[in-house]
Length: 448
Image 1 (cartoon, helix red, strand yellow):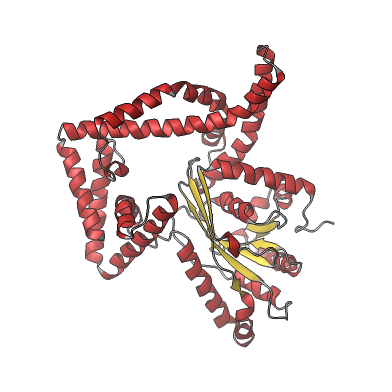
Image 2 (cartoon, one colour):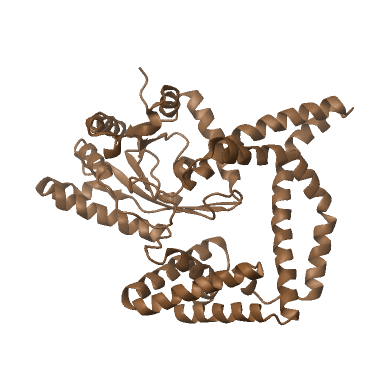
């Protein structure tokens, strides 16, 4: 029987296609610290967990092509025998929890033994150290299973080298929508060998020490808004103050630096909640009022970030959008069905209860739908037109870039519509706009 860490051609093809689609699911696929990934195992990738299977695919997308990553997932996903076979094919093993029944917890010993075997053969594991998933962007307590496996495997390496835990911070521009950014932030390896002597003397203390190290690394690599009481308000405050933090840190405005600025604001806000609870309560009230004001104005907070565009700039950009409208129409028509079908199936057929699974579901449905529709549309084009073979081939390969162009056009159109609306409110000297600007200034003043 083949081992789960073997790399058959069928898995390799599926993995490469999946990561190919995954990179194109996002408008920006940013990898930081890729040099920290060893060329071979034994390696345990330890990412933060907010986005279901997308988290695992992100790790596969940055791991070396000849390094299959074997993941652990909740055991209830394996109840259906066909699902279990598929998950085994994709190199996922079950992890049993209390909710799966006390009688099943003993099965974890067999799974852990298989994990140790993977590491003994210098392959890679992927374990979500938080043990569960939530959509709030904050790090939850780390469970001990990952460290139990790491120490058990390290005992088989006696030359001072061995198992490495690779912390991975994942930051998604949006946990549901496509065509946003993803940052995969790979940290420096944690050498389990460095903790082995302490583990032999006192396993509990050594486990706590390496857990604290991994947690500290993940906090620095991901966005950790560690508040229970003010989570939504702090999110609003971070969005409001992001541009100002970039200026404070003298950083140019780009995706990575905006992530750094969000991290820094989150630290300020968590410290504010801890040291000045009255001020945090006031900020919570201001943020709620600001959010209601923006909703009433039908504006997003970003419209206040830059100097208002002049009339000539708005007219020029609106003319450019009008001239490129035919490209949007063509791109939309060619991609409407494969783009909208996964959304319709997700909403009206499957309808997952947990928001954190939406992106994974839409991604996999889209990965199936797009190539099928592209082939069908190409066949239809070939049958309904006297085009030469090379034009048919060109048609096939142009469908995807035209779809991406349509998405960008739509985003820019919405952006300039918002700017036109903002300009109109300014010209009317809207009292509601002035109130929103005042609230915004108060929020920023409390942070800085």
